[in-house]
Length: 309
Image 1: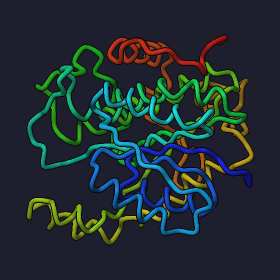
Image 2 (image 1 turned 135 degrees about the horizontal axis):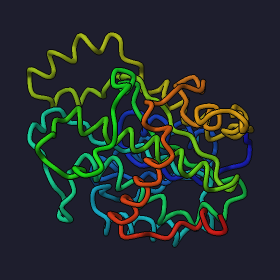
Image 3 (image 1 turned 60 degrees about the vertical axis):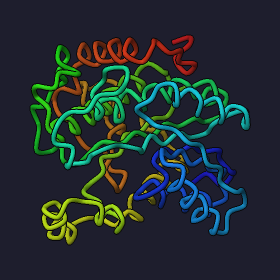
Image 4 (image 1 turned 120 degrees about the horizontal axis):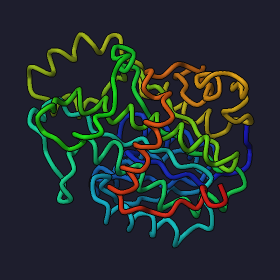
């Protein structure tokens, strides 16, 4: 495990897993940048993080992951204060089942797709010069254990922002598949310059304020599911373990094997054990197509960690 202080940026650090990870990482002495959408909740989270025995006070950066301009401003704010970034945790996501009809950003992208896939992609690209300047940069993305129930899920390449197929669950898992595929793409194209992980998050216990904000029918459904949900502290520890691990993802891979074997170790569960992704994620042509379309949708940002690949 790494003992030197790391500089870490984590999105969605105002609640849930993101907040617990930020608290734990700050307590371990790392420099934490808490990227949050809501200023009020962000300030409350910052107070909670800095109440720990942190050697370095965490800093708050406001960012809406569905807004490309806000993402660029947030990356610029971090770059003003640090010369490198050891770890980016793209944790923020939207999965509000009360959003029964599709919503769209000012750029015309469906909200779940924009927040859960396009936003993390653009932020990682914007911060990639800082990652490239770190001695052992890492990037953590987040997917969902719910994908186990969808082994045949595919990216809807020709209907990415089409409202006709929308439901909260479909939109959420579609974006989470894209996160796995993007992580695979980066792993194969950074040639050891960037250590990546995509964490398969199980159902996690929600914070009380989030439950209180739910419509009554959803609160009733959640009451039974809560019993089987993992505490967010448990997943916060998973993030921290990836941040400090000595080995890289390819310690579990078999370069001479098939696609699954070559990529083994990138997609991991809460115990850091390698797990299989949906079959579509192993299609190299599909990953390349997703990367190209995502680059176009996010303004073709520069990726410093890919230079020279």
